[in-house]
Amino acid sequence: MTTPTLEPVTFGELPLRIEDVLALANRQVPTQLQGDPAYRERIAKGARFLDSLLDKEGVIYGVTTGYGDSCVVAVPLHHVEALPRHLYTFHGCGLGKLLDAQATRAVLAARLQSLCHGVSGVRVELLERLQAFLEHDILPLIPEEGSVGASGDLTPLSYVAATLSGEREVMFRGERRQAADVHRELGWEPLVLRPKEALALMNGTAVMTGLACLAYARADYLLQLATRITALNVVALQGNPEHFDERLFATKPHPGQMQVAAWLRKDLAIDAPTAPLHRLQDRYSLRCAPHVLGVLADSLNWLRSFIEIELNSANDNPIIDAEAERVLHGGHFYGGHIAFAMDSLKNLVANVADLLDRQLALLVDERYNHGLPSNLSGATADRAMLNHGFKAVQIGTSAWTAEALKNTMPASVFSRSTECHNQDKVSMGTIAARDAIRVLELTEQVAAATLLAANQGVWLRSKAEDARPLPPALAAMHEELAKDFPPVIEDRALEGELRLCLKRIAEQHWRLHA
Image (cartoon, one colour):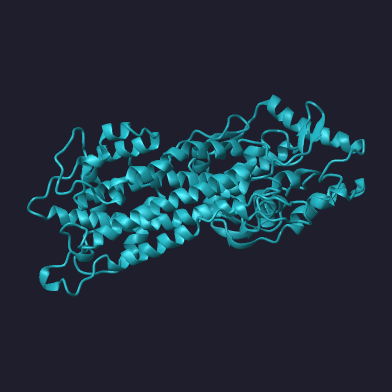
């Protein structure tokens, strides 16, 4: 987990990194809005330019027209002020579970960062209030379902627009509250959104982008954890460490593959060729682990690029160019890059689940685990017939892996025409991001189960007369795990320990290879 720091994240100053969003989502850093007068004047200039167009009775999508295919419907000037409220009101139809607090903070950060570009025609006061929501941890209750990813995340972001206006509900200080009551308690007047402001808040990719930032951070840690689990399993299964030889990987130099092999060499304390044990070649789930995990490692760079460019972009419509005095109508709300990134990530992560599932299958099967007890049971010989060790855990892992694999179907290819064929090609980026989060959840469950099983296997192997000392990194991990997860000797229900292990993974508790 990111180290807590008092250095604030300043919106409107520098590009944000995924790590910044993660720190904000975890409430590890304070926030502030750029205070430079020149910056604030640039923001205000956009709002004034919109006002000047209204004075001239200019035609601006979503300001003097209806929305979507209703853009051909002119809105009389005396109704223009009412249009923003209608927009967030009729989009109040989200369903499904509510985004959790971490995800909601990421969404708020992503939307604020985009609006701080100063090309959305919003007031400084709106940016200040959005930043205040983050700083005071006022979290709109946002249903996660209802976005097709173009025009942006309209329905979920309507809950941000509405709560800034004192409507709908928020989570505040651990309680579900009416937004109006929270405004009153803090001595704030709810915003009355001006022309274009509701559209600027809603017509963007903040939900999918916020979720993508969180998914990336989880995948990055999972890569390192899966490598450590593999190293433990090499020891438990008496694998051949020669499979990770540096000269071998120099002949096929994919950088991520080479990095994973290097991590395995470090974990296994291999700095020179070693004498093989009793096998020339291990099964693929050990031998090819760098080739599986290396694909994820190599993909993280371009995934980061896609996510961070979107995070630091203006992604609503229309774009208000006050300097050139132009209104630019386009399609920056389209979440295609996030959709592709998340569709790709869920496939990459599901392969990690499949790899670890195969390793666990080897561990529990006495035909393939090279002398370990069946199902990794630690029971004494006179009680072995009663005890079943990790048998059910392996079944559960198979189920979680199957579900992860099922969820790898790309969401982006299910684009469908919506909204009277105005939105006739949509990204499905938010569905892809939600799918990626689900695949990560399932794969983390597989990782938790395989980690506990691997640690059990290492413990069982250490009891053998010919046991070798554990390499330092693995010995430290083994000892730390033993504090919370003692060896399974007699059968016990492992749900509580699996949940604790999942909590440790979510906290990124173990320092690994970064």
